[in-house]
Amino acid sequence: MAIFIPLVTKFDDRGLQGAQRALANFQNFAVDVGRVAATAITAVGVASVREAAQFETSLSKIQGLVGVSTEEIIELANAARELGPAFGVSANEAADALFFITSAGLRGAGLQKSLRHLLRVLLLVWVTLRPLRILQPQR
Image (cartoon, rainbow, N blue to C red):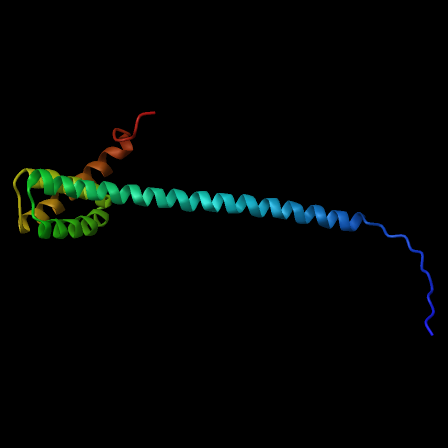
């Protein structure tokens, strides 16, 4: 035999409402963090693709305008990727320097030696003139 005893209680839901507000605020914060992270990842991806395209354009210029063979282009691309960062410039800047060197008619081992010297000069110029703000972009 079951006996039912009715209970009458008062429930104060202020604590529950506070927890719901805190959870909603956390959800908004998490969404904002996700948006910022997605934007940052997208920006890095876009910049990477742009840099790669510029690098390939520089190498295509060398091949098309100067007439360097595909095997030499592969060698030059590896040299630009290696030497650029070693001298504090991007691989794109090193590839652009290679264009000017190959346009002058240099080929073979002398080409990489010239690239090393040119990158050293660029680094020296940058370090020397940067404090004077001569190489700073105008705003």
